[in-house]
Every structure is written in structure tokens, then in C-alpha cells.
Length: 149
Figure 1 (tube, helix red, strand yellow):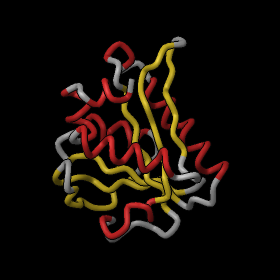
Figure 2 (cartoon, rainbow, N blue to C red):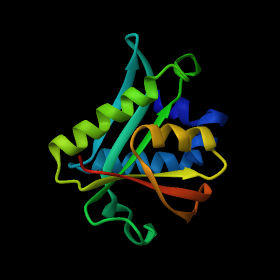
Figure 3 (cartoon, helix red, strand yellow):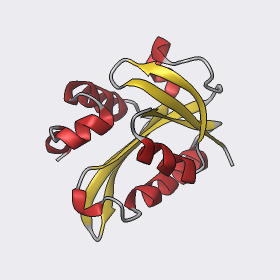
Figure 4 (cartoon, rainbow, N blue to C red):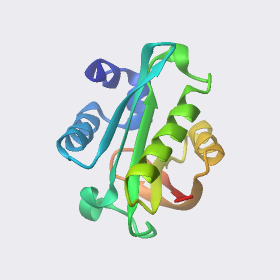
């Protein structure tokens, strides 16, 4: 299911190349402390989300990330569930799970600067702009942080 979603052009625009996304997901699946979740809506698969201690990404991390930050990625892959609040609810559930089960001090997301709707969605979810960083897959991207409640 994930592989078929990652092959969709709109998912690739959101997340980056299929190969890079598959490698990232594989790292999450192989990391005992990471959290990976299938997003369900109306009892059907709607998307995917994961969170992982950002130190797993090594020297690819930009300056400005607080120590103890966990990186969060989410995609609503099924078009029928977009713009219906499913992503916002999934973000809240993932944030609650990360902060409730780990010592994470913050969550981070990297959002392409050309994706204003995504930036606004993350703002509504409590993320704040920190800086623009060059993402090797997505190009110039906002580093957005949400602190621990």
C-alpha cells in the first residue's frame, strides 16, 4: 500500500522521490524507538505518518533544531480524505503519541517553501517557522518546530 502511494505524482511532490521516501520509511521501520502509523479515516487507509529521533538523520540536519527534536512526516495519500481534517487530526494524534511516550523536546517538519497550504496546516497544528533550509530532495524548505507542551 505504501509503495503504491509513493508512486503517485502528488505524493512525490509532497514527500520527494519515491526512492528517498522508501529509504526514509525503511529506516523508521528498522528503528525500534521510531513510531510509524497508518492513518485511517472512515475505517479505510487514508495515509501514513511517522516520527523518529532527528539524530538518526545525522549530518543532514540544519542548525536551529533544538536538542531532543523528533522529525515528523505525514501524508494523506488518498485524495478522498484530503481537505477534510484528516491530516490535522493525524498530526495531533502523532504529536500526542510522541510527547506522551518519548523524551522528545520538540517536533520538526520540513515543508517546501512552494507549498503554502502545507505550511499553513502545520501552523494551525502549532508548528512555527524557524528558518529556510536546503532540503536535498525537496529544495528550499521551511524548518518548522513545535515544542513540547
